[in-house]
Length: 271
Ligand code: 0L1
Ligand code: MG
Image 1: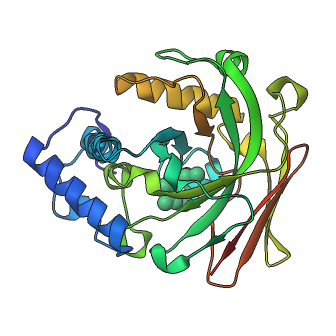
Image 2: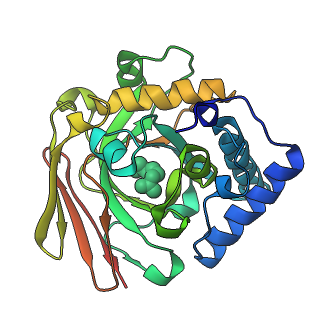
């Protein structure tokens, strides 16, 4: 990858950021695939990707939508290898992207949805960077629970690079949590086994250590990236720590269930 693309220093003009936010929002709203943004803006950096993401969040909040929290993206080695990138990302989660456990999601509202299972953290206290640690995350955590994330890259053929995927809010689309909420100290979060099933068949099996070594490390990473962006995690934030398995594609008719050791299961149906 072009090293300049990894820079947090913005290279684009404010008008370009607005135009790219329009472009991403149009694709998200119409469930329509678009070419990656760097095809037209080859100088775009990671900092520009976050500037577009920040503009998406600003517009969502201006519409009266409520932010529920944040997610870590591209945290597992499996995910990084699958996507051909090396640096994790963050994305924001709005409350209206949440679906009840067991509910039915319409595939035609999305471009090419994929599902992954994650450990979600709910914070009792705020967390701020720059040097947030696993221990600080665990101390600030109210409880953890199992979650499914439905990611939906808006880029044609899943062809994207880091600035483009960050501008697309790290492919965030929907999420659901369920199972059993547990105190973080009551479970060994470093070695939780997970089985992801599609239509009753196991399609991915992994352990939570796939998430940056420990899911709380991924949350610490979110906090430290947010610090670079001038933000922090508020008390009450819902934070998804990153896909434990590779993401699996879903089609209408699919029933997806993630069975977590210690945390129970969470399922979604697709129509
Ligand atoms: O949550 C994630 O890890 C998704 C990151 C973006 C890449 C993708 O669309 O798979
Ligand atoms: Mg994810």
